[in-house]
Amino acid sequence: MARLVIDPVTRAGGHLRIEADVSSGAVAEAWASATMFRDLETVLRGRDARDAWLLAERICGTCTSVHALASVRAVENALGIDIPTNARLIRNVLAATQLVRDHVLGFYLTQGPDWVDAKSALKADPAATSRLAGEASAWPRSGSEYLKGVRDRLAAVIESDQPGMFANGPWGHPAYHLTPEQNLLLLAHLLEALDWQRSFMRIHALLGGKDPHPQTYLVGGMALAPPWGGPNPSVTREHPQVPEHEAPVALSEAGIEMIDGLLTEALAFVEQVFVPDVRLLATAYPEWAALGTGAGDYLAWGDYPQKDGKDPVLFLPRGRVTDGNFNRGLEADPDRVAETVTHAWYTYSGGDEALLRPAEGETVPAWSGLPLPLDTLEGAAKYTWIKAARYDGKPMETGPLARVLVGAANGQSEIRLGLDKLLRETGLGVETLPGVLGRMLARALEAQVLVRQADAWLWELKTNLATGDVAVTDTSFWDPASWPSEAEGRSIGEGPRGAVGHWVRIRDGMIDGYQVVDGSTWNTSPRDAMGGRGPIEAALVGTPVADPTRPLEIQRVVHSFAPCAGCAAHLFDPRAAGPLEIRVRAGERTR
Image 1 (cartoon, rainbow, N blue to C red):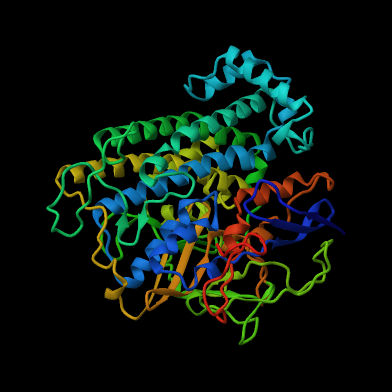
Image 2 (spheres, rainbow, N blue to C red):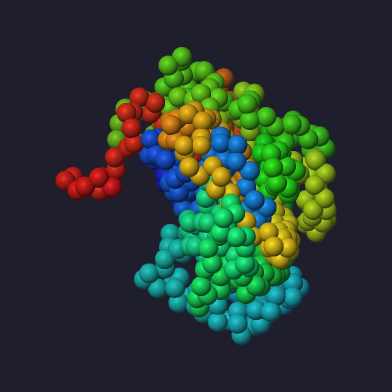
């Protein structure tokens, strides 16, 4: 039995290491290890609770606004704050925009090289590629001259001394099945996706002030000012006027029109490029529907509130699907979430095998002193900086596939109709969804559904502003003097890569404790006290490996989860006396 080590797993967020025992041409056992230790919860401790979101969103630079939204919601939950209608709609548009961008770029940049042979594309016939593109959709950039230009550009890079992202690829691997023309078409769309997302994310620049890491979230709403008139200066929630600049004000007629145009362009790209390309891969690699099937239990917290107030109906519903029963949606209760550190580099005061809820969690580092440089994790009881998140003691897969399965089981009409259509077009059955292809199809479906719904929320926002309701934030509880001396809150929602939960404890206006259980905490989790594998570890077992020196198949399974070890590994030290001091160099002032 051979031990394979992939460290780092490229095209994944953070520092992720995969070790796998391969026997008879397939993975027999696997271990997922986050090798980067982070300290975000400690950074947050002792800070003004109103600033939590600004620091928390730095958990990830790819998911960018996901943790900002989760953090600001957690503080609002602790303080009992209900945000205005306009703020809810703006947040929904921002979150949906982030999800669509993440799914599209994740497909082309993260997963693409696992399925597309770049050197094969250089042999493609542009005219044949153009015909292939025309059969797939009406996307206008499909002419033979255009595709010949793409082929020539790729050749100039790939065959140069500086091939960039195309260096050291497993080109010619026997697991590649696409024709040269299919490879060229997908690579052309990869390049177009880069240009598209640069334009599309102007929505975040308008509504969030910048991208990545939008700056307009606020405890109580959003820090935006619609130039639509407004209440008298003495009335709560009044916003100052903002002068017109060269770029339109986000909530002006021109700003909303620009956002609408960007969403329309995004819908065209998703439906005429992204979804057809996913269909192409699904039909070219049908065997991957049965590979990478994971633990078989799925969790979605749901997101995108449709109404104001507490416990609103969610556009993407909350729930669980278990034991392969895709027709029955079960409830999902955050109080039944707990984490164990049996195989993580932490320790619990009551024993590492214990399952602790995040609200009462302990996160005390306990590095086991493995020799560096690290050759293998073999024989190590603890092997990662990620805790093992469990629901009722069971590992749960989260992410697009979980949300689609939960949505379909709960009768969410857009998800159900879209899923039926996508399965018909690919010739796959619902029973094939738990595998690698299922995760890919779920991302395509979610992007299609959410880009449409984002436009509906935008027009709901415009309609509401036109009624004279211009409130975008409620500052009634902005002053910490109005807060209780102690408060606890949480937010549970969704990011592109999975279920996101933030738990906060506030004392005298400052953060006294903070915990994050992210989608990658669930998916990249290690074994628990009972020996149960985490979802990625379970999905890898049985994966064929044609060439152990180029374990392309292992990367396909891992990348199908879009893991981000940076989002999953955190620390909170309850013994710390105050805020963490961050120094750039010895002798410099505290930052």
